[in-house]
Length: 381
Image (cartoon, rainbow, N blue to C red; front, side, top):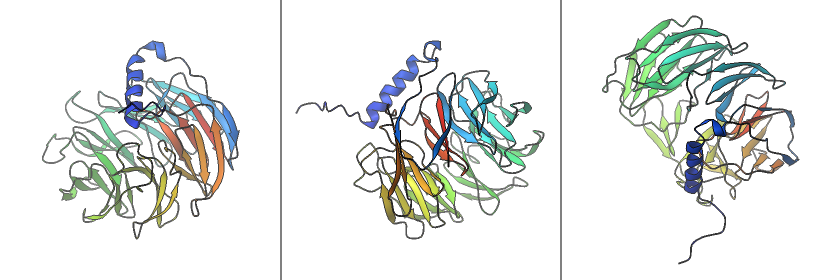
């Protein structure tokens, strides 16, 4: 049997290459600015608003407020004006950060993040000014921040191993906490947090705990493993190719990506779900391509880009579905009938590993695209 030398790298091979690159570039020699890719052509129904290049590659996808784009590298957080891309502020980290840590409060006024020592910091989203800092509860240096979730008045912080605090956004004081490191209470190495429609906090580890947002009382506990849950939608959890009822934690359905999506690794999972209509969920398959799912029947009703490898998150903006592919293209589709409504081509491909923060996001005001380098592209219609 001869070896395959057709020039196409598998997902595993791409991951190995990128990991080796990140190891080699852990010093200062690889932190210089990367030349932005060139847009070769575009027929997208949107216009490029601005392009910003940071001092080193992004380490997480940006997050959006009403007026500011928050960008993160391993060395700092940046606040960029949403309309112009102008840098408003920069907050250097005390040590290099590798996790996607910043969280925006739902009122848009705060940027909250944690570091490896367990310090939780809140900045003004507009000025970058430090509003408060506090040490997350529990023993010093035993954990890193695993998950942060915000609602209008409080931010909920979970550490690794799992201790949980509810902190008031205005002043950093604690509303309630579960600081005991008790494997029988919150097992696992970390937690994923969701706020449900009934104003309950779901703490997902290898078990699920339902907590009252106001007083921190644990109202229900389930033994089912939802550690792979990606999103909570209409009282249902989606993720790891399965759907669960959020009230009973019982599995409702088993989901599988279409078999004709090209082989790029494990095809039994999808990530980054996104809803356009009340009854449809859009997801990017780990094996490439995008599909839409009827939330009532769990049947796949439309597929897109089944012959390409979709990279990272997808988004719906101004009634079009946008996806980034590994060949460096941005595709726009009518999400209902699957018809192409535009294409943007660049002169560079996109690396193939979940380590890099590539993908598309939108808050319906702008569309933000990252290709896994130091550049942020913002589009608007």
